[in-house]
Length: 352
Image (cartoon, rainbow, N blue to C red; front, side, top):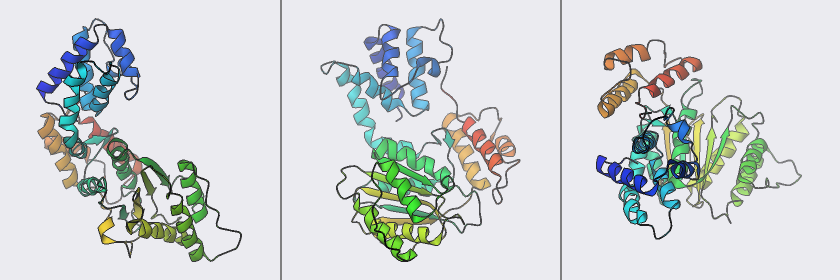
């Protein structure tokens, strides 16, 4: 959510009227949906006047993407007949349609800088629609170790939390030791609060086992009134057995049939493009590494939006430093993390 200077003035005036004492304001910040301490937002506020504190908090909320929570927190703390509802509710209404687009134009999400994810952002916007795609598969041939699947997960997670209000279930095949069909289903059911499905005591073949698990697992959603976003990360790894991959493909085929209205499946890393997915309810794309062009566009976006590039004099100076020690064709995870942190620091922080 991004407010115009006029809207920021309206919000600032509302805060001054609603909170003549800073203690009440601090209490509101600590309550849901905000849950923050002012001392963590403004590191040094001794001697700072109340109007300036409120102004700094508003700018921090806008820069860190929790402005909607701030407005809702203020409204939640007011009596139902408070005139603040008439003042602030229109801000939420006016920016509701813009909110998704604003999110998808963010340069950072949850502190992670995003470049080269325009296609993913567009697809996620489609998946918010009831009649939109229900399955997203990002596939990779497995030769590239760090191809950006978990990087994509950050964006999926933020969108599910802020826009879809969905239950997010995440399984990373790099973090779990049991990669069998049983291990995957047990992990998902544990997170969802479901008992794992009973498939009987007989010993079916791997293919039969996978097919049986697909039907039993998806049957758990029949009576659920919640929306579920299931994210499977790094399924392209060599340590994921063929029968587990086949089960994932079976789940994807079933969800893409359109029968599972409340389920969205994200396979962030598969060893191939999946076959037999319903075109209307699925999207597939190959994972591509970052390149110098992607980074340059990101840096230029920062420069255009904020008219600043941190400690760098210009775009060329920023690119020279950012790319000095990064090989996107054979990336080193530690160097990628340093690179990502540097990208994030290009974004100006709110005044403190």
